[in-house]
Image (cartoon, rainbow, N blue to C red):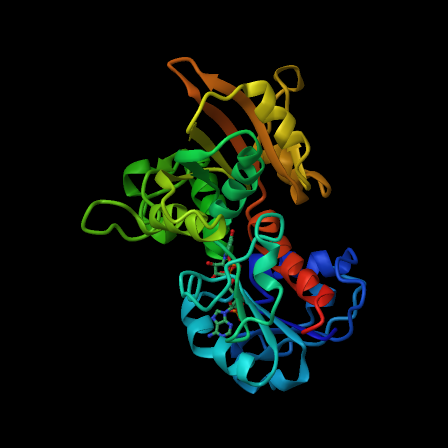
Length: 346
Ligand SMILES: NC(=O)c1ccc[n+]([C@@H]2O[C@H](COP(=O)([O-])OP(=O)(O)OC[C@H]3O[C@@H](n4cnc5c(N)ncnc54)[C@H](OP(=O)(O)O)[C@@H]3O)[C@@H](O)[C@H]2O)c1
C-alpha cells in the first residue's frame, strides 16, 4: 500500500510517521510526506530519526494523488476542503483528520472499535472522516457501557492539552511557561494561539462560540458521538477546557442510563473492551503525562475513577484519558486505513 501523509511536518503527521515506523501497516509501500511549499524537500526520515524509508516532502500542489492508494490528511479543514475531493477523484482513499466533512451524511465518521461496519463498502465520495480527538476517547469509553444498559444522557467536561493546537500550540505553552518562570510580567501576556494565555492557566473556551454560548469544540462533542454511535437522540452536554498540559486529553464524564447500573458491571464491561485500559479503585487512575510517556499506553484509551453517582443509581462517573495525537488522531486514522485494507474494495 502506497500512502501519502498530508501535513506530515505537523504534530499529527509526525505521529502518523512514527506509527508507520513502528510497523503499524505491515504491507507498506511508498511513504510520501506532503506539506506546504515551504517544507518541500525536507528529509523527515532524517529529521525525525526514522529508519522507515520516507520520500522527501512534496509540496501539496505539486503532488500527483493518483500515485498513492491512500492519503491521510492532517493539514487543517481549509486544506481538506480544497484538496481531499481532488485526491479522492484521482483514486486515493482519503482519511481526513480535520472537521471539514465529519457531519456530512455521505461521509462515514469512523472509530474502528465502535462502528467498523460503516466501512463495509467503499465510501461513496472516497473520503472517510476521522472524528475530533476528544470525541474519539469519549465514544471509546461509552461504547462498551452499552453492554450494561441504555445510555440516555452524557455530560462531559474535557481538559484538553496544548498539542491539540498543533506545533504552534506546543511552542506557545513552552515559550510562555519559560518566560513566566524567567520573571516576565503576567500582565504583559499575549493571547496567542488559544485566545488567552495558557501557561499556568486553563481556558474554558475552545473555538468560536455560537449564539447560545456553546463553543465549536463543545458542538463537536455533542454531534459526533450521536453520529458514530448511531444514537441521534443521545443527549450530550459538554464543557471543553484547554489546560496547560503538553499532551494528552482528559475528560470527566457523567453517564446516565435508562435503568439502574452498577460501577462493578461498568468496570467489567470496560475491561472487556479492546485497546482500553480500565482501572479499578485499587489500581490508581490515569493521568495524561504518564499515559503519553509510554509508547504502549499512549495507544490505549484509559478509564479510571469509575463510580456510581451517589444521588442517582442510574448514573456513573468516569475519568477518561488518551493521547490526543495518537488515539485521538494518527492511530485512529491508520486503524481506518488498516480496516479499509481488510475490505475487498480498497
Ligand atoms: N493536534 C491534535 O491533537 C489533533 C487531533 C485531531 C485532529 N487534528 C487535526 O489534524 C490537523 C493537523 O493538526 P496538527 O495539530 O498536526 O497541526 P500542525 O502541527 O499545525 O501541522 C499542520 C500541518 O499542515 C501543513 N500545512 C499547513 N498549511 C498547508 C498548506 N497550505 N499546504 C499543505 N500543507 C499545509 C503543515 O505543513 P508546513 O509545516 O509545511 O506548514 C503541517 O504539516 C488539523 O486539521 C487538526 O484539526 C489535530
